[in-house]
View 1 (cartoon, rainbow over the protein chains, first blue to last red):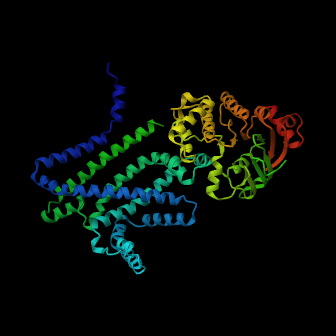
View 2 (cartoon, chains in turn blue, cyan):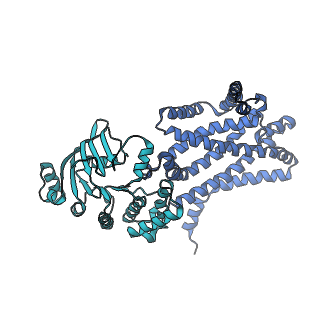
View 3 (tube, one colour):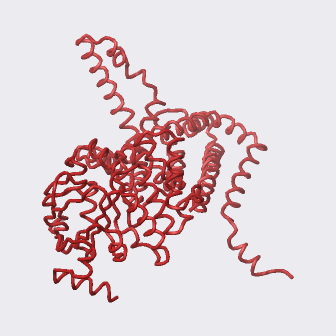
Amino acid sequence: MLNWNGIRSRLRDYPWWLVGILFLVLGTFYLILTQPTFNEAFAFIKAGLSVTLSTTFSAFGIALVIGLLAGLGRISSNVLIRNIATLYIELVRGIPMLVLIFVIAIVVVPAMVSGLNALGATLAENGLPFLAALFSGIENKEVPMTARAITALAATYGAFLAEIFRAGIQSIGKGQMEAARSQGMSYVQAMRYVILPQAVRNVLPALGNDFISMLKDSSLVSVLAVRDITQVTRLYTGQTFRYQEAFTTLAILYLTMTVILSLLVKTIEGKLRRNE
Amino acid sequence: MNNPDAMIFMRDLHKSFGTIEAVNGVTLSIGRGKVMVIIGPSGSGKSTLLRCINHLEIETAGEIWVDGEKLTRDQTQLNRIRAEIGMVFQHFNLYPHLTVLENITLAQQIVRRRTKAEAIEIARQQLDRVRILRKKDDFPFQLSGGQQQRVAIARALAMNPKIMLFDEPTSALDPEMIKEVLDVMLDLVEDGITMVVVTHEMGFARRAANEVVFMDRGKVVEQAAPEAFFTNPQSERSQLFLSQILNK
């Protein structure tokens, strides 16, 4: 006999949304394989894939370091450190990401370069030519837009990740810190060996979701003429006027990457929950 | 009786949280190898007093001396002294991401700088001492409350402390698990380690303590040998407390 209730509840819980996405993705790839216009657009756009991926990965790596440091700074008992970390986070949160990318690439990075040059000049005057060599002779035009884009993305996401790390650390009961300190561990040792391993585990899904967000937001670096998939799509449409083919392909490319990643995050999340 | 040569000595200790005086002028000394049990109603400041001994709480006024050394705010000194003071908490506070064995080897390796092999060997001895060696590869969440607390005791002992502090070690346990923890603590008394115990277990206080301290509203109300305290309490406050607790 058929178990109708079982079948009904299975049908209700089935991830139909995923079938929809699969339909869109496969449909588009069918067009790419069969239609010459789509095929040409895809061939052009996929050249930007390595830039999109390498920009995202390197920016996220740097953002993890910035985020961890700023997150620790946010809960520091040192007033100065805490305020610097909070200032950084609030600055980033108060400015639209697109604007921030312009500001960092066009204002902040050149200012840093001038600062380093000035430092180098001072070191040279004071008879430290070895150190001076490290800091001078960098010229603004030598800092490639890709590097500026990575800096901008990393600085922006560093602030988001800082809040994730802070929340993760604060979710660990204060008894853990007390137990570690009572055994003679320093604050840093207690963080490193007791608090952070637990906190990072708790925020792994949130970090994964931010990685996906960053992959999408990496499209913003196209405004700096970095040749990621969004930028090459714009270049392609400028030459061919095939807007529909190009932007459909672009959207489906992002969708394919983000859906794969978000399924990965869901799997990790489920594994973590099972181990609790 | 109050002398700076004692293992723990505190003079006119005060600790306030905002306007609340949790500890309000306590002078006590605990001799080497002695067991002091601190009792009193909840909110009387006994846990806070205990936490002042290893500076988990920093006193607002007064002095604490541990093994002849005055506690300062210097972190290096504090970490060194804390390594000599084992602490057992009400809620165990085991490290949930580590196995039982790793819980016990972690601080040995990074604070005592023992090799992994040494640390494991000592961890095994201590786990055997608290009769739970067979659980060494389990994670804390797989253990009962009583087992977790015994692991916590082993974790503290593995550092070879001169002093053991117990902050209501059986208060979070189911009744049938209290005994296994108290039995382990009684073994320690035999071994002659200096102990300060905050507890509501009057049976333990009577059997194990060299001295019972009764606290109320941040002050030491009465301090006596257990027999004298339980059979003939001097102050009205401790008489009332004992009658309430024993007639339960």
